[in-house]
Image (cartoon, rainbow over all chains, first blue to last red; front, side):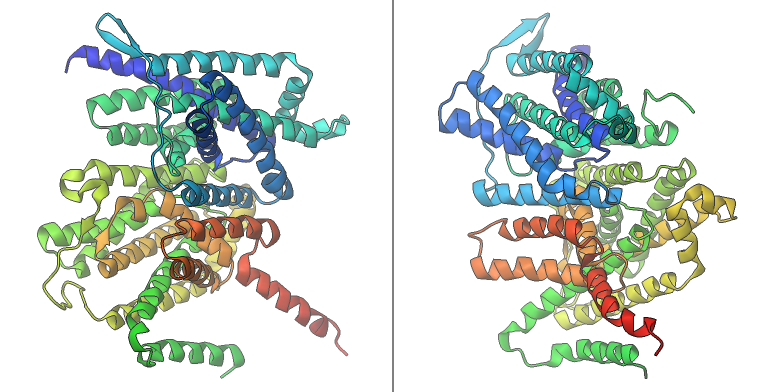
Amino acid sequence: MDPIFLVEAAINGILLGGVLAVLALGLNLIFGVLDIVWIAYVDLVMLAMYAFYFMVQGHGWSVWVAGPATLVVGALLGIAVHLLIISPILTSAPINQLLATGGLLFFLQSFATFLWTTDHRSVRLSLPSVEIGGIFLPFTRVIPFAISILAMLALYLFLRHTYIGTAIRAVSQDRDAMALMGANPQRVYVVTSAVGGAMAGLAATLLSFQYSVHPFFGGQFGPLTFMICVLGGLGNMVGAFVASFVMSEIIAIGGVMFSTEMGYVIAFVVFIVVMFARPGGILARRE
Amino acid sequence: MSGPRLAAALAIAALVGAPFVPMGGMRQYVLHVAIQIFIWAFIGSAWSLMGRFGLVSLGHGAFLGVGAYTTVLLWNHFRLTPWLGGPAGVGLAVLVALVLGYPCFRFRVVGHYFGLVTLAVGEVVRLLIIAERDWTEGSLGLTLKTAGGDSLLAVQFADKRVFYYAALLVWLAGLWIWHRVDRSMARAALEAIGEDETAAASVGIHVTRFKLGITVASAALTAFGGALYAQYITYVNPDTLSGIGVSLKIVFAVVLGGMYSLLGPLIGTALTTALSEGLRIAFGLKFLGMAETIYGVLLIVFIIFLPAGIAGGARRLVGRRVAPVTASPA
């Protein structure tokens, strides 16, 4: 096989990894603070993709207006999910929490089917490609990658240098101690869910550059996103960032060498094996 | 005979006699719905064998797919009778369960992590079936080759009543196994493990062995259910028989019905089937997705307000009414 294909696959892997990292960080932020895995997280992304699609195609909004608007939609969805579903079951058994968001997954998928049928809808942005040394880099991948890196930087600064960001990190370190210090965890939860939702909205915008949306879009990226979070260590932001690129490289290169499905199979098997060897994630310290 | 036993005997007699009740043109349809309910309730019981002890698998589609595909592929390509193909599928599923379960339990992959690892296994099976499209037909699905008419050897029958009795028998066998586990020492051991693994190990419970045992039993029954379903529907598809979708559907039907109760899986499956069939009849294909939408809302509401499921909730309600009587020895 021509090595240029492998190089191209590796670069595409990095470009996809950026967007996956946004997804994984959003989910992981929520997990770190609330200790709940939102199984339906990528289905919220699907909903936000529909919002983006209707803003751009239905109302003719510019991408530059629709993008930030989608972010707001995502944040509102995050708050709604928290208030309606998560906060009544905050103290339930973990399995019930997992299943409640799983119920949400079913609801979102089928309600989207009901409202918009199973048609694939695409925003169809036509952007040029650049050629560097015989390798084509489509702008539909380069721009989302650049934006996702900037967004993660923004998230980092938000968590490091704002008061509420510090509070979020404090809660994810020790929930009970935070309440003892007189802080109100409920407010932190809502803000976290909003930020996580906004990340979903951002991911939706970026994914719309390359993928068409349909009600079962969540199935395409959902399992992968959970696995990235777990691989990086649930709640560990740096780990999730690294794991996104590891997984996207495996999928991209495996996809070129064997087939798309085999790329995913290899990635999932790597995930399972790593779980046995390092259950705390790739960056966890050994006990 | 005591009350509950009599009720059970009457219910079974009613189910055995049901196919002979005159139903006019509805007979085939009613039987079809009943067969599906029995098979999926059996699979749900198999799942709840381990689910009730905190071993929440989100990847039972893996076992279902392995059981169904092994049986169908062996018949289609080698004309091997399902009487041997089915056990082969069950054996393969047991192997998968061992390869997955042993390291999981040895290295203490529990809770969320166990759920997500099993979810990955379910996806791996689905993707492998799609990737091996040369002989599995990939995501198009595979139709069981016909034996040309009724054949006991091929387990193919035009008369739905045969499958009705087979499914009923299998479902009852599933209940019996569930009941046996419920009454065994293994239950006490597994409950202790579910509560606190370290404490259980410290009183001499062999944690890995018990967990592996129940996982293997659950996987074997699930694979058997998958093989039976494939024989009845005569068509297998990677998306409906493996992967995250069907894995979650199994879990949800059981949670809806009540995973700690004998009849929970049946109630959950019957309810969800009735809901989707009812809405399909009422609205046709106009409201595509409406049944699942309501189903999703019900799930969320149930998990928030009735976490023990319908059967568990009903039992608690009855228990509350009975409790004062037994508590006051007048």
